[in-house]
Image 1: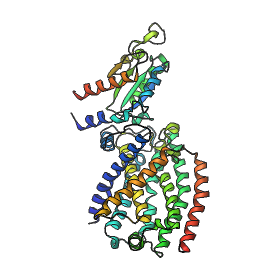
Image 2 (image 1 turned 90 degrees about the horizontal axis):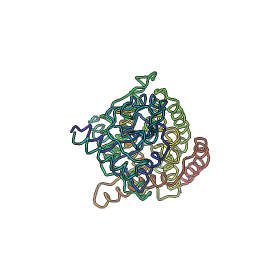
Image 3 (image 1 turned 45 degrees about the vertical axis):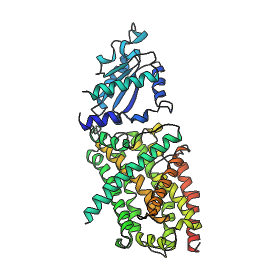
Image 4 (image 1 turned 180 degrees about the horizontal axis):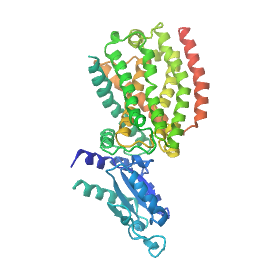
Length: 140
Length: 306
């Protein structure tokens, strides 16, 4: 594994992007940053600007309005970067599956590296998902 | 020989100690918040990672200024560090007026942040850069007044080496009432120079998302972070040289030197963790009001020989 990727996995700065979610997943994501879970142990920091981010945490059901913004924002992340879909909405559109406004799942819009299901997923589930993603990328 | 000093002491040693200082800052912050905190190598890993990332230049930005600005800041920090290290290791190798040179060079990292912020064509970066400019204007006056106290104490010498030698002969300036007042003022100015809470209005993360650094990615951001980490070592080092008698590299002096450095760093970190952010006008009023008065009082006391 290259030094570049190794360093990336040791200090993934996350950017938190809500594409029309009901805010539950956002609250659970922010819970990971609290002292109780303390993900700074693994070098994870919350980046304010998308230009500083390595991991894009997407929540919500990607409606028609936000899908365009999502593509623009994905192009602004400096590569290499990873994308994680949090919550059932990103993967299967959850209970909005029949909505006219949620046409496709997230991976039809941008490439996704991991999905973390749950409505909303617990902070423990989010951390477990990120650990599995890091293992997967680390093994190539 | 000059190149050796610049590369080894100015850059390498300062960068390593700066990364350690940044780790101490993050670890103390974590302990204050009942967290575990990042591992020792974390600041280095962050820099290596950022160096490996793509560098994006925003559309419409002033490309050359945007890319050169971080390097100007780094060059300024390296130059200050070299002057300080040479004076620390060989107190008689300095030149008359290096005190003035250090004060001038210390504003260059701030200038580079202002330059980079305005060059990036982002409204939030412009707000951050203009706040940074106001902050520089507000803290420079009390900082220079406070820094004049050791000059008066050493009999009007503007050579850092001589200020150090006087302190080794007759005790640190922080032992006098004028010295302790000036040290307090200088410490708060250092807080503003590092743009840490309570004076982090230029980079307010929750308000204007890192201000001038918002558009930086990849190696530009890495250089800015490295500069900031180095300043985290350089500024406490300057305070120790001016007020606490510098480092001593023999016997128990080593332990005492480390204690001085970590003590000042922990003080800065605790101030940053226990205070809310002040608005830029409040910061300006604070520095031009109480801080300037205290610094002037310290100067008068120093002239009276207290």
